[in-house]
Length: 119
Image 1: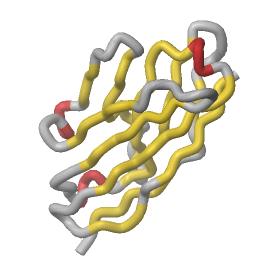
Image 2: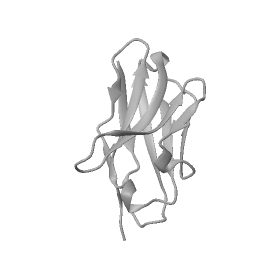
Image 3: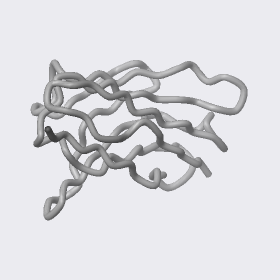
Image 4: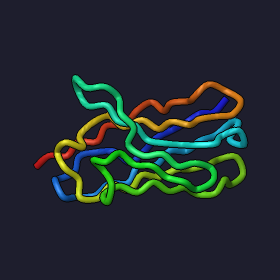
């Protein structure tokens, strides 16, 4: 199994920046993609960004040019993925979830972390 722990959320003013981190542990060798999703109140969870083990990325249209997903190469037993969020807008306010897709186990989710963009 893969375990995920998120950090880095909080309150930021419009136009500001935040960086989210997601530390994966457990069977990290089986991970072939990691991504970030978000869910705003009353809305469905949506994909924000995804990064494959081959280095390919995909972004939601609403965040292209503002958000960047990246990773640290696996070190020992931890593999960390980041979401750098710049030029934040109030509509980016949501609970953000880290996701890991494994070749051996069901998809894993983090506990979710709140991002609030407000003046």
